[in-house]
Amino acid sequence: MILNRLLLFILCASIGFACSLPIQSANKPKPGATKTKSTTKTKSSNTTPTKTYREAVATPFRKKVVDYGKKFVGTNYKYAGQSPKTGFDCSGFTSYVLKEFGVMASPASAIQATEGRYVAIDRVMPGDLIFFGESKKRISHVALVVDRGPEGITCVHSTTSRGVIIENISQSSYWKTKILFARDIISED
Figure (spheres, rainbow, N blue to C red):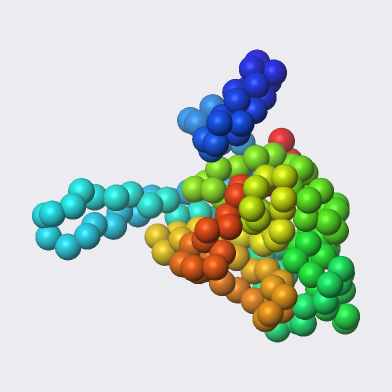
């Protein structure tokens, strides 16, 4: 069964489709699993159909990870930086935050991009990592998800020009076009 899911994932990825592979029954959440809440948003009058957005609701553990990451907003960028004293690069920042909670992640974004499990962008949860670049083989940036809601995906990340910031990547003309995929490296499966 797992081999079939893996082959399906590889097939989807190779032809450019995002696919989400169910790990468990949709009716029976795993203890401590993250919950989601649906909200509905409609455009004006009766000209367009209703679009449903799913808002992510963080587990207490994921909330702690995100809150800790947000404490470093304003920290300077430093190439290959892995400390708030000297500054962070993008993957040094995510690695440092996760390490505080016993989650070991490489300080290199290309390696982080292989850790954990794939998550569809429209299903990311606070604490997941989103990867950016030109292609899956050319990762150039990583960010920690803060929130996913009706307005899009908000992340905390270390940027070369502004250091550690919180930003809605779904509304950023720069980042939106560079989003590749997401990984969950903090859930215990």
